Image (cartoon, rainbow, N blue to C red; front, side, top):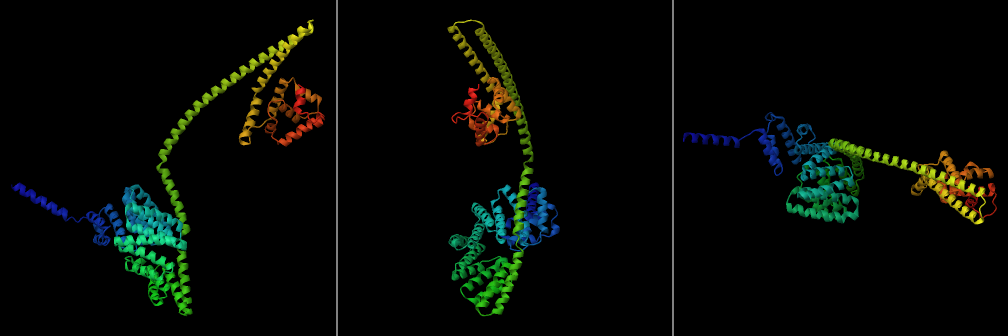
Length: 566
């Protein structure tokens, strides 16, 4: 009984200790849970934690991330990145991807606040890489939105619009109305800058966004949609509507950083409705902004009002200040640096992908090389075997044809001798002559077959085929090839080239052309072998006929003469 009571007391004591635990890590988790719905409470909670309470590197990194996040959500401008660097270094070392993504995102926000847009983009791109690994569409959407905002500030509208489209899709996917309204508003601003033909499209988008913002009853959403609508109606010369939405923007604006831009917008709207006194009040308020573009816009309108009121000296002074602030603003343009950053980040991304896939690449390369070499060896051996077989067959065929030719020559010689020595009757002689003609025909057929299997003939066919397919050939007819062609021609046609050279004063080149005429190759293909034009072939043929052979009959061709010469 006493043991049970003691156990109950101990359990109650432990429960009370657990419920009233005030360790820093526990406080950090509590602050994190408040971050989305109540960022002001989260910030207040974090400020109650003293640095000496953060004993571990993990707690210090977590605190650095949360305090940076809380200050950003409470619209506190941060330009010192020493705290967030602690978080980045720790989460990079532990490879905690969810916190890596957030740390780089807020580091990018601080770089953005310092107007170091190229560096901000670098951090945002790294954050996107980590967010994609997590499939965290909400965080990715906000990162893309910041990237697009930087492009917009640098007047890179085309790039900005493409990124806002991604943001819009992610916002719809994550059902984030605030992000969606922001993306739609910014895309509409780009449409407005494109010109009058885009105004109607922009108005439709913005009215839809404004309607949704009213349903959500979130003041920052209403402010964003109202700002864009006021700007649009100002461009459309609808002054009354421009004033209404400009007031709505100011009334719902929680972010003091952009409040001065709202004053400029309302002052401009009053100017367009010729309410100059009201315009002066808000334009002068806009001059307290630290943004050079906002100040330049206010001075421009103040110059216009002074001129309309006949205050020329003041108008000139305002114009000088307008020019001064515009120069300062343009000096901060970092478009070229941003484009360079994009290229560098793309290169780094490709290098990271390469390193990540290096082992896989080596594996596939080595495997592929082994397979390729194996296949190559198998194919090479088979090819070599086929070549050897083909050459052996060719040698055997040439030997066989040679033996048959020798046999035919012996038969022809024997038959001719027999006809000459014996006194045969006329009928017997005629039969022997017919037999002799058959033997000669068979001999010529063997010579033709031998010629068609010769290297020089096969090479001619290859060159012609190459020219037909690609209008060029990697092979050319050499001096040795011409010598072989002459030898083959003489073998077939009883030393015809020697007989031609003896009878007519033909050059070596003309002998080559005659050899081609004694083949079965069409005349139109001679130019591929001799590497000249068809016209050149025609002129050479004409020269042989008219000047060398001295043939006056125009109907007689060189082929006819050569065939009669066989």
